[in-house]
Image 1: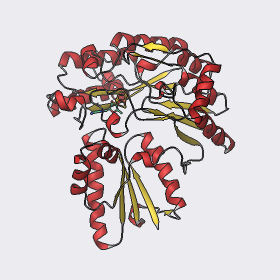
Image 2: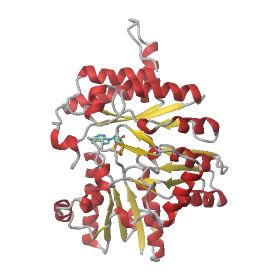
Image 3: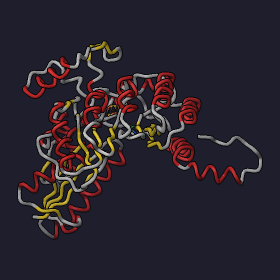
Image 4: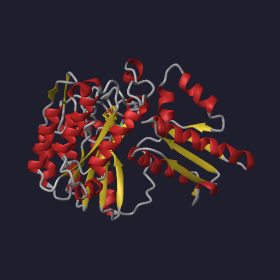
Length: 397
Ligand code: 5AD
Ligand code: SF4
């Protein structure tokens, strides 16, 4: 049998697909060059926005026509299935089965797990997941419902995987997690062989839990810096990590990055909004001032730093003035790149349940375009500048 894995969405999904590929190889399947050559198609889905979800439905529809002409197995996995299996009422899974009758199997993400060695296609760069899921419950985000609560891989397991990568000649590694810099907070106090070793490591390094105000509990905020330090010392040409939450960006983490020139100088730091009331509505636990203070600290301590970010425009009730606050923060920071999204209500999220999606699409689109032009197409702005005769304000990055 020949398989093809179609992956939508984030790097976590790509990393999961590499593990799925390993499972299929063990079952004596081989990769098809093209989707059209495959007789076993795995669709790894994303739900972050409605448009991403629709792409999966579109593909299943196309494949269901192929299936009428020849034998074909269609397997659905990823976030759509994650949400369906986590919905205790079973309603969501029933709905998926009804609207996607061509799907032969719904594979929950958990079954992919961390135990399968990934089958990598890139021989230079490797994705290494360090945690799954998220505990932050940003009000717009479906991830805590599709991938569940945050589960960290044991420290030693990650270190072992990275050592194998170095031995196999890999030069670049990216540590992956929905909230990479909160890595390890769930490992403390667990009772398994692997996590006992992590606990011993925490004790040996005299790491002290601190009280985290927004979580209302003690936790070790400095395990990720130790992990990053350990991986950076292995000798990779480049070590990166994705994605970090500004709340968990500790001084220890900044110090580790500053110390290791092989840790990437482009850091992804999602802002989401530059307005404090919006941030609060989004359940993001920082203010604009705190974000900018962190940026200033990062720039001071890490020469050559470039920042990239995620921003949502048109979130529930966002006024023009609030959007302009975002524009203003973007100008202050000078992001090298921004992934700007128009707010899309997602099932199960707090925003979808209680906050009206009241910003009209053309307004979202206009705000999106303003940020795109400001951050992602500065050359366009520069060209406009040279032809600008009236001396009106020029956006500077
Ligand atoms: N609508 C639009 N964008 C979203 N994101 C997450 N959820 C939504 C949503 N419901 C964006 C955020 C996040 C990135 C991965 O996707 O900016 O950081
Ligand atoms: Fe979603 Fe927020 Fe978790 Fe990121 S930190 S995955 S935006 S809930």
